[in-house]
Image (cartoon, rainbow, N blue to C red; front, side, top):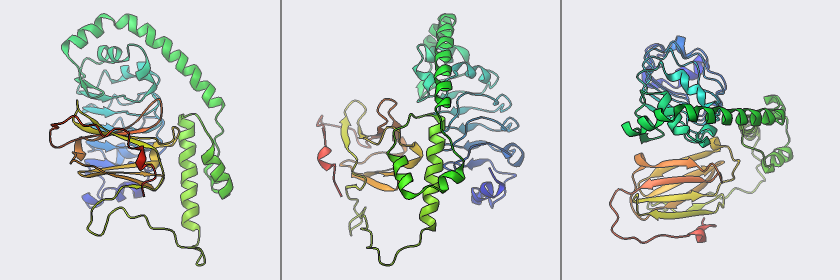
Amino acid sequence: VTEELVRKRCEHNDREIGSLEELSLHQEDIEKLEHLQHWCRNLKILLLHSNLISKIENLGKLKYLEYVNFSLNNIEKIENLEGCESLNKLDFTLNFIGELTSVDTLKKNIHLETLYLSGNPCTDYPGYRDYVIATLPQLKQLDGIEILPSDRIKAMQQYEKIREVILQEQRKHAAKRERQKLGSKMKDSEDYENLTREQLQEYWSEVNEYTPETKTETAKVARACRKKDSEQKEDPTAPSKRTIRLFDKQGNPLNVNEAKIPFRIEENDETNSYVLDLSVYKYLDTNLLEVDVQPNYVRVMVKKKAFQLVLQEEVSPDRSIAQRSQTTGHLVVTMPKVMPSYDNNNLGDTNGLYYCK
């Protein structure tokens, strides 16, 4: 984290960082947290999602910090947040947290009411939810679900039994992580920049287990690809690339599947919403996906290639949710409709649009 980056991200505050209350540093390939607790002591909201942060550190002096978004990083345990005494909301969605007992460190954050751990290995442990509820009595909501008094009573009654199970699962996960680290073949950033295009293509075709190490490696390779593209001079004799049109001449959105990705779109009558299941590659880094939900269409950029689908009914972008399936790796976008549903027609399988241009 550099001062130049922070000032660039706070243009709304006349590039003044000392009085900054909200800061967004998402999608910057940040690997280490530094300096913020000294530069931005008045921070209340800190958005760090979609980076490569592996350790929570150097935030303990941010006494006014209320909300931190750590989603889509490489964090494996919760730590070093005890000094953030105003914390009200924490989001750790889609990290690599396997040490569930590290939530114990949040006991001193008495104002913490909302916690998200969805998409972490620890959520697969038997009794995960009860353990967190029993450990953090101040919580009111976990993974978007309200904690009822009956939930807390049940969790407290089973706490000792659940804790033993959690410790066993943690030991299994720790052993698995040791094996993954031994199999990791991380290189320096400079090594990736020296790869030829053929070597880069070979890398993208490889199948690797999704780990903090492979995620960081993928980010470095993607960075090297971007650098090569920016340095490459355009060949005047090369044929011009076909321009993908996302809208017609009247400004209406078009169906586009530039990446030729299989997908399925359905209507969920119970939630009155559209559910898009996009079959992206299981080990594709989430940082290479960009989702944009608009009232009448949804667009997903997959490694800079466009997938766009026109919706028959208006949806609410603010209430829409995009998640990766933990089993298939598919991108699932749930888009609640604005108007209530009066029929039960289902769009069914629309893979006929597989090659929609």
